Image (cartoon, rainbow, N blue to C red):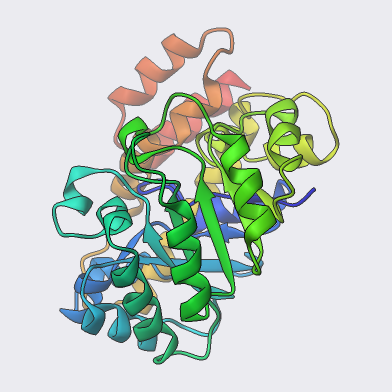
Length: 313
């Protein structure tokens, strides 16, 4: 069973992708990269496209609603990535109000045009991530599949929920199985995978790979657990936290060197901000976790963070 890391805005940065790769992920995805941001020269957007050494296969996921923007974005994506993925599934308002993300599900023909614009401006494979429809009253996943295949997409990822479900509720595996049976390109399944049991249920649909998202937060080695058919270990604890912190600092130095004219936070500030994104999660459910998180929340220096982590060990 192939298991891949889902793109998660605010989470799947280079350090986390690297950990997930070490934890057994067969492929990882960047956070969503704004095609309009790239077209307008946004440096923070460029930061999302930086990688650490030895990350393994990484897909660069972009989002946008204009053919000119996604065409430009595709032209500047480094060939260090294994592919470029178009997001047509994110239901968040800040994305859909721009006509991007899940808003595109309403218009399969537009998805076709966007994918064509991308493929005409890069030699990298183009793929699509979407959902099975806007709501239970309209399942247009098969139209979306046709649009992707017609545009020459090499793979399609279906989050087997409707846009209206956001990130919860029933995962429609029957629809996913039917999509797999009709598709002429590989289909990756996404939605609700949190352990071996749920991964196995999705794998039975015949998908080429199973995608894990939020269940990997705090446990980047869940991929190995799923592949080996065992229960995940849960939160990574202090040692995993320290390893992640080390990769964060390495990545911070890469950004500072790569973008000398940009403001890149000091190591202290960089680590403090990222604590709230990732590092607290490694202690979830462990003895004394609440007290430890309270202490970490008060510090702003890297040395203090290390002292608290070491005291936990």
